[in-house]
Structures are given as structure tokens and as C-alpha cells.
Image (cartoon, rainbow, N blue to C red; front, side, top):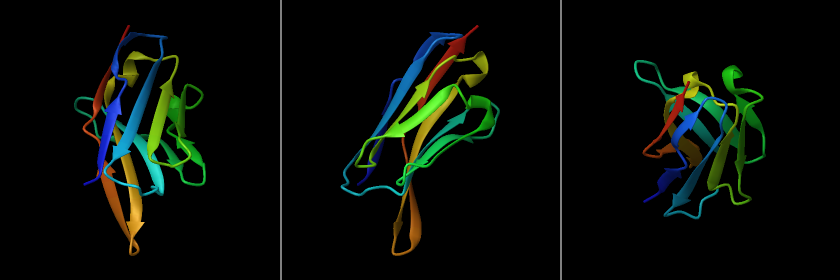
Length: 119
């Protein structure tokens, strides 16, 4: 049973920083990609940042230059360094990872960690 466990959320003032971590247990698989999503109350879940097994990264425009996604060499732990946080970054942040099994994509999700940025 593959599980993703997030940590590092919390309450921070605007302009501050937080570092989220997400580790996988129950697997020795190397994921094809690992991602961070977020969902604020009343809004759809959005993809914030992604990193592929090849090291390619991508960010939603609203966090470019402020957030950095990284992973360990085994591609089963992912981090999100969040700097210059804004109140609009407040949301539940979810870790996601996926791999291909016999050509079929399988997704895994963490339970979410709350990030609250006060103004």
C-alpha cells in the first residue's frame, strides 16, 4: 500500500517562508512525476508545481519566482520551498505522485497539509 505523507504546513505571516515535504512509504517505486496541488475554500484544486523523474519542473504563474519544487534522487520524496508567501497562497496543499503500470497511469495522493498566510 503506497502512502504519501505531507508535513511542513502551518501559519505564517505574509512575506514569510514555509517548506513542505512529502515522502512515500510502502513502495520502492520511482515515480514518473511528483506534484503539489492546492485547494482553497470554494475554489477548484489547482496544480501548483511539478517535477518529473528527468528533473523538469513546472509552476503555475502565480508562484513562479517564489516557490521551488525539488525531489530526492530516488524520486519518492518531494519538497516545496515557499518564499514571499501571500495571503492568497492560503490553502490545503496536497502531494501527488504518479507512475505507469503496464502503460496505465496510477495516481497517489497525500492527506493534505494546511498553509495559512496572514496579512
